[in-house]
Amino acid sequence: MRPIKQAFYYPECFIQFRRWINTVVAQNRYIGLVTYNGFELLDIAGPAAVFEAANIIVPNSYTLFVLSSSGGLIKSSIGVRVQTDRIDSKKYYHTLMISGSPDYRIPLHNKDLEKYLKQYANKCERIASICTGSFALGRAGLLDGKRSTTHWPDLETFAKEFPTTEVDYHSIYVKHDQIWSSAGMMAGIDMSLSIISEDLGHEVSDKTSDHMVNFYRRPSGVGQREKYLSIKPKDESFNDIFSWIRANLEGNLSVATLAKYSGMSIRNFTRHFSKKVGCSPAKYVEHIRVEVSTHMLLNTNYTIDRIASKVGISSTETLRKIYIRRFGCSPHQIRVKGSRNLTEVSSGRGNHRKEAGGENRKRQIMTPKRD
Image (spheres, helix red, strand yellow):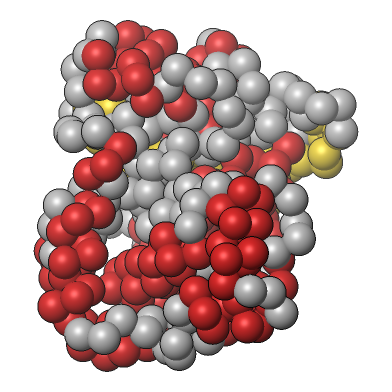
């Protein structure tokens, strides 16, 4: 019988020991940010900034390592070089995050990355991909039978390359068991905030988002090519009134009130607002109220009655009617089901996960626009 101390010389035993330590102590999770030549810089910088901010809220929660197969300087797609540590399959990481590339073929055909992922898949608590990094997960066989996503311009190719994967054509990030995948660069930040929420709680995630001056953490079901607020002002002349609306959601935000705040007549204010913003003042206010109330439904324990009150909606019945009209389901259903089915009825989108070649899916990915 071997002495107990010899167990620590074996990688598997060491990994199990470190996993137990992480579970008991629940601190200082090791995050490995995996790169390769041609990686997208923000896919690493974005999540790194999120975990750094989380460490400010709850010190020593995360330790970050930037990794590559060779170690040393690795050149990103934009030309910026990043110093990395060499990937070591014997080292324990709580979470691995695989960066993407503007060219999906780079992670797809990276043999070193494929080999490492196959070796390490069962040795960490969580594996995540940003943008086209999901192609590396698929090539390593980690997405077989799992729901996943990638950056929207490459969804069709992704579905063809990995037919055993259930492709989510809508969500900005997806979690299936211990595997996470996300869409474009900014979605990696949202996914990282959600990871922090899972590790440290919603409150820490929200404080991290606030620290980064990010208005709120987008839930996974927000479409890759849509936001709750799809209004895009043509200039910044109404920025002051936008901020005032958000700060006074519980109050009277009638057109008369907004016009008075802006120092304009009702008629003149409505005409200028509609021209510059692209919708009526009343529609804009409703958009903001729905945006904020949805965030509260998914990220707080407030009652629906309290949420309606906090966003300035007169009753839960009025809030329910707004959600039925916009999303085809009630606030309660949004809270119970999460955000996977949060697609505007008016957009004409039904089931946002279609088989490859489906006409509904094609309509969602026609117009090029970087996430």
